[in-house]
Length: 335
Image (cartoon, rainbow, N blue to C red):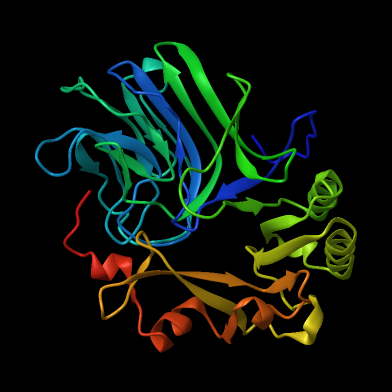
């Protein structure tokens, strides 16, 4: 779902939507004992975070309603009142995982890694709406998740209430499109989502779909789009439509084909101060690290003109900037 190029009158589908840990969506749906979730997702930033769910309070009682979280260094599990874990899967492996939690009131939790397990009755009543890319805890986005979502859904009893697919709207803004309710669901956090592109063909369709209004769009491209044809299309779209494109690469190529003759052993990184950032400085301030392999923009195509610096990896950038990953800095926080 969401991986095909499918223009409509109001949107075009993406392969996936990615949060840097800053973006999230309020579904405005409060679950109950008969509600179910499905999630097709992949963790990108390792940490004690939640991709889809809500909770009544912090750590006072067991009121978690969380979709299965793909494995991280903390655990592989889900929230059904208490936090429940599957043994043998600790460790971050970046796997893309399709999961179900009480989908269509099945009273089961399912995933390819853990199989199927029965669920006990839910012993509390959720009070807050479900967030995508975070947990809604007492009405605030916490445990913000850095990762990709290909599709997600909400069921009530035997009916499907929402089916979310990644999309770009007429203005060029990444979002989730709810196919059941026929409405756009936008980021209510900081910045904007990264638009995941599945192929060179999809990239060309997206660039053609964008309005000639200018704007900023971060694209995560596969190796197939990391090509002279892809670079030329991005350059032409930038010149004709006034957009700035920050380009990431999510599939490892054998060699770089982007302009500026950069090697694959180097990436560009910049740090952004944020209260919900993934990194902690010695003075207690929080930061996010954004990365790219190329920029096509109004200032030129050199990423340094947009505040990026070159490093061998994001980890090296964090070390040089003396930033500690949130997973280590917040080691006392538990889901």
